[in-house]
Image (cartoon, rainbow, N blue to C red; front, side, top):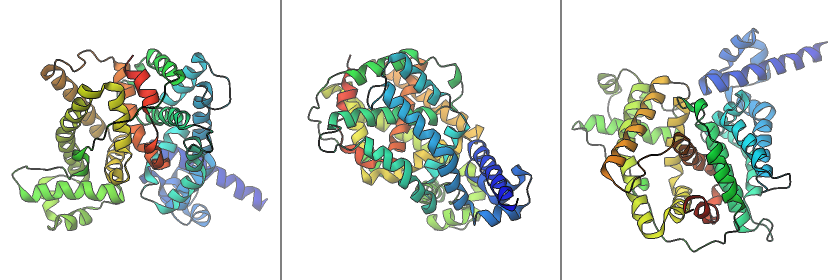
Amino acid sequence: MAQARVLRNDALILDAALDAASQDGWPGLALTAVARRTGLSLRPVANRFADRSELAAAVWRERAAPVLLTALEHALSTAGLIPGEASAAGFRTAMQHLARPDKALLAAIELLVMSGFDPILAAEVQQGVAAEVLGWCTPQRGRPTRAQAARRAYLLIVALGLVAVARRPGSEQVNLTEELDTLFMALQADASPQPLPKAYPQHLADDIPFNTGDPIHDALLTSVLRLVGTSGYDGATTARIARGAKVAEANIFLRHASKLDLFIDASARQHALGFPANAEFQQRLEEQHGAGITEAVMIREILRPEFSHQRAVYGEELRVSWHNDELLRKQEEQFQSFVEQQSAANPDWPSTLSAARVHVGLATGYGIGLLGILAPEAGSLPFDVVTIPLLDS
């Protein structure tokens, strides 16, 4: 009876923790918060799990990771990239499941992002899903070939990214059929790798040059982004942010109502400067080499080890926005404003981007960062075998 009760409580705790991770994110995995969800006292939860990290690792292992792996395997098999029955219709179904994720998939991406800041969770991720993904994306004795591994890796980027951007306003109304059919055809193309040009996005390597006219404000903006990239948003306390800026903590609250308000301000300013710099870098490449080569170069460069901090910051911006409507709304407004400005200022910029194309494009951008957590080595793969047939057709 006692053993049955323990097993029953374990299932109850893990189910509640899965709900918490998908709905409230990392803060919702605090043991006291999970205990409230279960209706149990804190004691049985604390007796089973020493802290939030151990609970998160168990949720990943027992609830989230199996669902994520199954979904990724289904996408790869229906695309004909691993053994299985390949079909355009089956591929659409598999990818639509990722684009309209259930709570297990949402929790999986939450925990995947947080694994970059929690060693116990990171070890669990690396032992399971990361090892499987790395196997899919690593050429071994010609099987898969580098081109096959690149196709798999590109599909995983889009698949992971679709889950990540599923909470965008209006995403449930976006019809992805045409974009998914185009991707399916590109994955079937028998393209050979081409030499990619050397190009280094210096704007990703440098700190954002904030210039608000207030040196203390500039230092706080820089400090919060640096700290979020190394410790995550939840680990970036106002005391640590102030120490990083070498100012008193009170300076934060003289300028911002809360840590979240400071982070939203820093994120908005970062994007206001970063979006145009990135667009200019890509435009120069595209004028010389075409869209397909440019996309392949961008994936290679973003996956560079030295850009792991920048990937972490963008991943945290997205993750925090899943649980904060204000940040999510501001991110969406800023992106749409950027698209409109580029369309007005640059005749070569696509003036009529479909909602589906924008959505998949954003998914691809965020998916690169997620693949960077699981298989950063994939940056050496020849992604042009997909991007050229996908974008230059």
